[in-house]
Each structure stands twice: as structure tokens, then as C-alpha cells.
Amino acid sequence: MTSSDLPTTLSRRDFLSLGLGALGLAGLLQSGAITYQFLAPRTIEGEFGGVVHAGELVSFPPGSVTEFPDGRFFLVRLDDGGLLAVYRRCTHLGCAVAWHPTEDRFTCPCHGSHFDQAGVVENPPAPRPLDTFAITLRDGQISVDTARPQRRDHFSVDQVVYG
Image 1 (cartoon, helix red, strand yellow):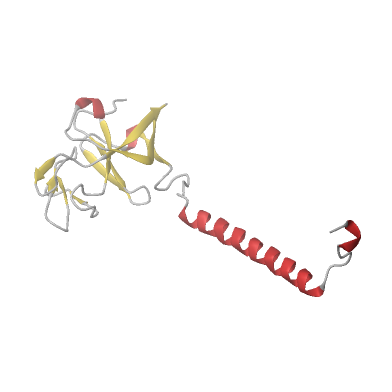
Image 2: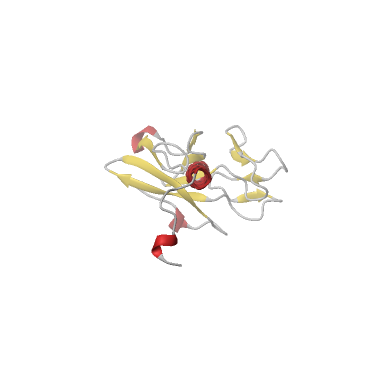
């Protein structure tokens, strides 16, 4: 076949095939981008998955437990002044625990696990203490990074942040 044998014009059928192929490819790329945006983790400042600015250290008296619903954690100021950011997710099946100040403990509504103020298991079936989040204390301001829960198998003083 020589170059003079090749068609010099594009037939209507070939034009429509190329156009439909280009539209299909554009639709596939757009669908992929939308799927990625839907499945990608959201790290919004001040909400779960990002850094939550809790406030000033002096705002949290020793022995207090303050819930941050948007951050999905409790900021615990222990009696000795130390800080823990306790994830509100139970380590048994992932239910949201609640703080009961009259009982001085966290309680899981699903299967009855109880945790003390530091998140240590007092009543199973939860297998281990509540997870925590990293705390940054700078110039009296408390920030909690909720991007990665810190799994713990026991309570240790190393987990507590002092100001």
C-alpha cells in the first residue's frame, strides 16, 4: 500500500467514532476525579482528621473532662495537671463512649464497658484502654492532632502531656 492509496479525508463514521471515544474518555476521567474526591480523607482545620485548637490551658481545671464533638475526643485534665486527648471510640466495637461526671468514668452504651478518667478499662469487654491523640502545648495554647489515633495497650505516664 502506498501513500497515494490512503484516504485523505475523514469519513463521517470515523469522525463520530473518534468523537464518541473522546467523550467516553473525558467522562471516565471525570468519574475517577469525583470518586477520588469522595473517598479522600477530609482534613479540615478544627474538625476530626485535622488539628483542633482546644483553647488555653488555664481554661481546663485539674480533674476536668471536656468533650469536643467535632474532634471526636475528650480533653482530660488529670488531677495532677497532666493532659490526655482521649478518643471517644470504644476499643471493643467502636461505639461512641460518653463521659458520666457523677460516676467519674466513660461508659460504652453498646456492651457496658467502663473506663476511668485516663481511659483505662475498668469493666470489660473492651480489650484495652481508649486510644489517644497527640497534644501540642505551645504558649499556653492546646492543640490536638486528630489525624492519627495513638493505640495503647496500657496506661503510662509517658502518654500524659504536662504544661
